[in-house]
Image 1 (cartoon, rainbow, N blue to C red):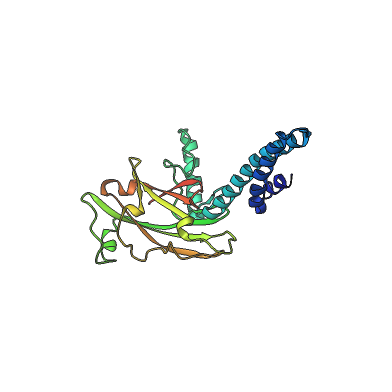
Image 2: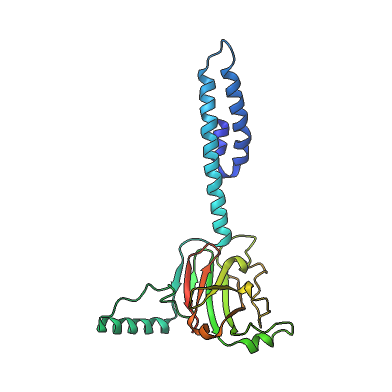
Length: 249
């Protein structure tokens, strides 16, 4: 019974895991003793098995909560820039007047949020500050070892900010706080780590951020020149946050 109780307490799981196997073995032994009542042994066997199951449930719940806190979780909210919101409202009224089909939901590839939208959950806030198309010259001038993009492609610079909103006393690094990908017009995903160049004024994704601290800087994507302005950015606040899409122009 003691092992069962400890198995239900997140901070004392290890104690329960030590006691429950011992209880299980002793219960089995008691069942094979001659001239002894079996009731207590059966009860101990049942409690040890149920306690083990409960212990695993509590363990996975604790792990899930810890991962969610470390990588960002909770419901994602998005706040658009005020001028963009007004423009969207006017556009929606025009669509209604013309009786055209309803637009796709905001934040999708078909109807991305505008640059400057604040994407936020309980742990992280991410803002795409600007997108610079045709940024090959700027990237090439940032470091002498940067190589030119492949023929038919160009570099695109994305400047963004990642703010840690959680209360982890050990802080978190921006690499866990913001995941940004470039999705081309044909649906192909381009990751920044696919582009082995150094961006001008790159964002620092490795320094620890504490509550309300922000990292801001650039990251680079190598995308097809023909459709560079037709893609969208796939943005997550936290590695496990909801994915929303942001326009590139």
